[in-house]
Image (cartoon, rainbow, N blue to C red):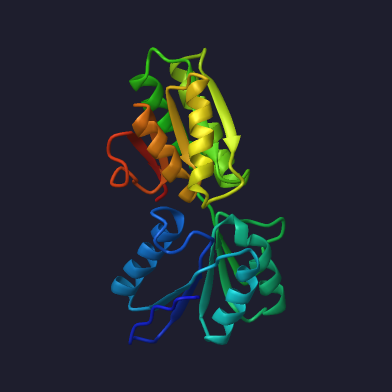
Length: 242
């Protein structure tokens, strides 16, 4: 079920291998594809994407991208790190990039693209603690315990404690970037413990968090891309990757 998007211009072919959740996830995959489309418009490169439904799709999609004679293959997200690293060693002439992933030794044919999520998280923390100045309890839901997610958490925690030294951050990992019902369960549990707002750094899991925050009239904080269009009522702010 891998979809391909093709265009007529073919000088340089850049293929994105997406993480799970599809190209229209309103989050990480979608922001990567939006950037690729912008590159197509501004630079004239040919861009395509391959969707991953399971972990095993990462490797087979990279193989497909190589068979397509891609000039550059971009692994979208930390979860693709291992597959990109293996492929880079097997295909030393092929150029790769990995977003949110790095290695102890970065192969010469791989570009590692990382962001300073702590800074964005910190600013979101300041905004949240100032808005909810009478609250001491805040929530953070991560998809997986991976570096980018941990960075958001640590920055956010520092931000809320700067404004309110008594602030406590309740943290839980969904072990998914797609399961909205898991987001609902965690959000309900956190709100019952008294949190005033919840950060969702969990891709599609966030949808469940936003639903519960809207029902319970609590604030949510988004990451990666502006998500207020998805849930204008509960979303206080979004910590954006640029």
